[in-house]
Amino acid sequence: MRFIKFAGTIALIMALGCGSTSDPGVSHSTATLSVTGGDTEVPVEVESVNLSPDPSPVTSDPPTVTPDPSTITTDVPTNAIPIAQKDSSPEQKSTASDLDPAILCVLIEEEAQIKCESMNVEEGSQYRWTSTATDQDMGGSKWQFTINKEPIGDKEQVFLEICQGSNCQTLETSVDTSAISSDSNEIENPTESKTDLEGSYEEHSDKDNKLDNMTMQSEYSRGKCDPDGTQYLDSPPMNADEITFMKPMGVMQGDHITPIDHMYVNYEPGSSPDVLAMADGHIVHIGHTGVDHRVIIEYSCDLYSIYIHIHELDPDIASQLDWVGSDKESKGRSYTRVPVRSGMIIGNQTGDQSFDLSVVDTRVILSGFVDLRNYREEFWKSHCVDPYDYWQGLFKKQLLEKTIVVNDNPPGGKIDYDVDGRLIGNWFEEGTGGYSGGVRTESDRHGISGHLAIAPSALVEDKLIISFGNFQNEGSRRFFANDDAPDPANVGPSSGIVMYELWDVNRGPDRDGICCDEGLEVVGTGERWYGDTYPEGGLTPIFYDHISSVVLLEMLDERTIKLETFNLWDEKLKKMKTAEEITQFTDKFRIFNR
Image 1 (spheres, rainbow, N blue to C red):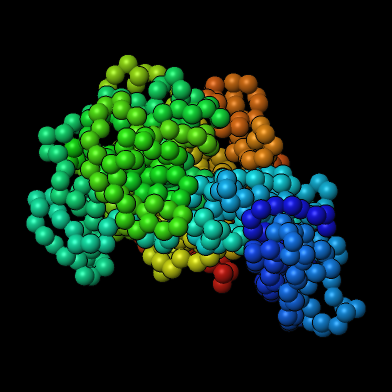
Image 2 (cartoon, rainbow, N blue to C red):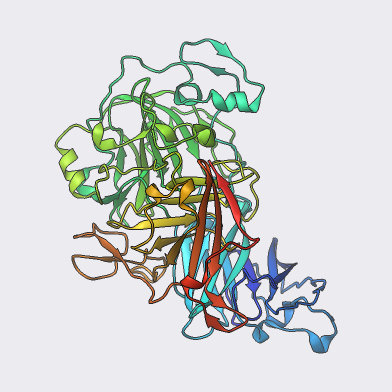
């Protein structure tokens, strides 16, 4: 292993053998060693994966390796990495150089980035990197990305799927991000007693009762909203000339398994555009992740906007804020009412290439969520509306020309596709707690493993996406369905078992060779789309030349479905099955409801 110099935290994972980690014969063993240098102790998690049909128990106690204390940046020599063995005698121990695939990840603390590199990967392999710390993914042997998820946990997971043809395995490692983590997973709202819109005092001791009563007015305006405020938006969120393109609501990517409730406002990478208030109103909430800000502006008692990933606040606004819940990394949250004027600078972007935009009108309740109780902790979601219905001014036409619009969708996008008694829309695995999830874990920081969406693509014309929060125990994945698949809007309890082919796209690195594209091609040019320009003529997927999986679905009643996914690679026969061979469920099915 070559020496890697760094400032921050490293995590190393190694896997033995090849094949899908969803095989029933897979066993895992995790060991932890401490690499100490200077004043820095770096925990490294090592996981061995035995993919043999009848794995033997693995046990081994990891030693502690102490390098020269004169330097904090340290190399981890291969002979210091123990891999768990049945017998720990010296002649049976493996070293890193003996192993098949491995990944090394480094936390770059000052830039809030994670940098990863793969090792011992067979030439010609296909790569797919994902992480709980970002909604991006990537192909290629290396990956460096900015942590853009809120909140940041004490540990974040990085996954690398490696495929040779249809034979795949997934590596996973934990990266210690405690140095830049958020203090808690709480929703950004005050824990004090709430005041409702009319000003009456109400204290909620029961969690369910509190969730049922959470609103934009109670949690953010806190009884002080302006009943005479505006009902339209007469400024763009950013100077229209500085916006390169806009993604609509409804995209499914990263940890956004169900259609996203915000648009993406994209600007030139490396530029520093200002973010603007879209009308007269008041800032009523700002949350700080330690990296960037979530800003909520109230324009009236009904109309709000939510900006996420705002890097720098305007100094005049920042000087007026009182913060609560701060820690060593985060300023916490502010509920100071700060008046703003239309077009006023709220903040400035200094990194990435986009920020998130939602417009919320509490008078509107989206009809495409069959049970709003699933979304109680994100109480704004059922009120997210198309900004184009509220924008007024010459800039509106400019923005429309830069917005990706497909099919007959509203230009701002659509997020609610549920039809009661039909397969289309959002589903949640039984017992996982709906959209907000139940128990959060190190590998599922955002509670999305129980999510499932069957909905049209927001970026590609006439394509259906099936999006999994947990695909074959390998983390989140999304696929395009075959074009001749049953229309989920027509599949009901009387339809019986239906099958969808799952087609994956060939993702690659971005223009800089660091991050990832989305596996899409610009129709107008025939070139790969790197997500930083408006795609003239639309987008089309870059598919692999074969399918690797299928999914069986059956509606058991109006709001319950049965699901099972199948890898078409037959490990016993060492060949691919055909989709037509998959006709019945096994005992590995999962139940979802809504």
